[in-house]
Length: 462
Image (cartoon, rainbow, N blue to C red; front, side, top):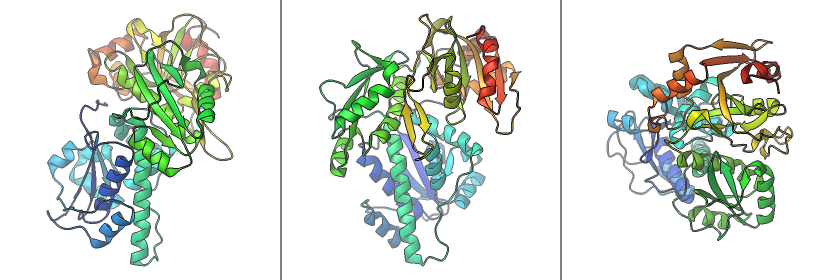
């Protein structure tokens, strides 16, 4: 069950002695977060060692690597890992797989929030988590069960010690830079110095008006691409409840300045649009905490406004299902299904991430560009909820299996943002499950075979 983030998100980096990898990881992750304008009261990074000697100095080679990558190695002292540190950590990053395994053996409850740095970097590479940062450990742990990713950096075994240290330092710097870039889009900025006087556009994300401010050398290209991707969400005459500043420029100095001023800044339009999707989604979620039930789910609507919600974590088939079935049924959303009073559904027809077959880069495509069916001109109301279970070796003909009430609620709770802020909490989920006639698990291998089931799910043919 995912809980909300009320204080700083606490990251604990662990290795054996806390004088090498973990020290480098702590200082370089701090550096990259600071470069994105994220203060330590939003994300707090510390480190400790499984068998550390309290007060020990950092290994000189580790300090040299931190300095080489423009971090700050001064004042560091090793700390021995304690139960208090473990209990306080939201995410634990280990230097290597054997250290992660030792940690979990000593503190079994850390299994779902302990990762190696290599694991996290690779898991983030494959999936964009459009969810509050507090949910990321759970989402990463789920993705790790589905995918095989390297749990350590691939360093040459025959490298000399000095070369190996340099290669490891570079790998840690690259991984922490990538993680900081992802987290910067998720954590709303407290600095608004870079916002233009007027937004380039305002988008509606399940009822939340989010202003998007575009700037930089590629302003015209960014603005045009943004309007194409977000066309179905663009609104006018609304007072923004949240905002995102977006800068695209080729000059690293310009990007650095923009980030320190609170903007999301990138060197390409494609990258900017990729992170914009997560930024808008999370800001909208934060604006509706406690007011809506917000599920990690795709949504499709029939002509009468009946909506089927397909619940699943990021990276497990929601977008592909939305693209395929959305050609026949109204596209509601592919990521966040927002449900209000009396089962009312608030649409969020955001861009869909599509991997380019040649470049393997995820591009953001608008619903109109993918020729997805528009929503009916009637109020939307939730009719059915199903849990997606995509299996590569699954049945040729998809199966619908009813779930027990308690089992269904437990599965739904794992895919819900800010459960503890919803009035009634689990009782509210129980009422929701009852209102839609219970939950079912949809098991399939090819999403195209799901289309014949839609009339049954939605209560009528398209």
